[in-house]
Image (cartoon, rainbow, N blue to C red):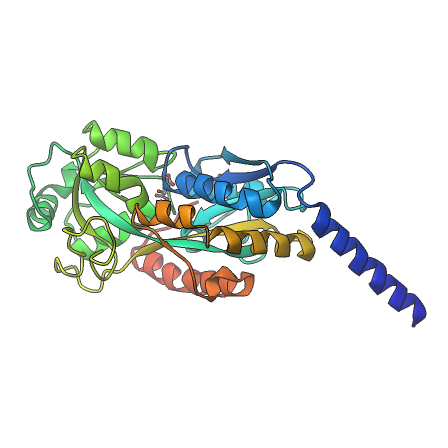
Length: 327
Ligand code: MLT
């Protein structure tokens, strides 16, 4: 019995020491999409807000794009379990679970869920060369020409891909649009502005400034209600208001570490995340782009994981109904 007490005590002391000495080197946050996109923006703003609560830690953001975010996520799943390699990812953690027949990780088994960050609406966009002036004209044009047009996204299982899938299923097009994958919606946005692609669905964190500057046309938001209570995109209807029955899509972002990262370290990271999400500067920057910081129990590791498990179930049904899968 005495031996057990000594063992438990030494484990507690080493966990406490670990938490005190963490981080012992620069922390890398992996973003599984190209630099300059909405996921990258959330990660960089979060990194700034987590530096201080982690003792002025050096936090580096690294972009590892490809395959709808699954390459970067797989990289983190296989990283050292010491808390110095983290992942910021979004709804793709749930969408890819139902879409890909083979993945380099298991969403619910290969990560420590550190807590969620925000909820972000999406916007339906058209290239500036389209004549449509509102959603009704836009939808009629797509209905008549869908087979000749292309829709950009950030890879199979990305938020922009999922939104495009759901929206096209709702439109019941005779001929589906051609979908064009990019390493992220930052390069995809450049192609939309340049008229190389016709349509994209992307997060407000990447689209508010482009719509307001007139570089692309915004036609609707994907949340059930318009963003009337936000400071941005007030004049855009929701797709539901525009007649797309029951359409309701919000993109959430979460923070993850490799499964097996010590509990003392994951607690330190969750504590720092909670401080960051209360940082007025971080909140202001996120809200200015239509994002809403998570304040409910999804900020806890348990709440985060339970929420994602539910999203895997609901999104798998949507993806299977659209007859989509990826190898
Ligand atoms: C997505 O469509 O999943 C994201 O916007 C990708 C990105 O952050 O570039």
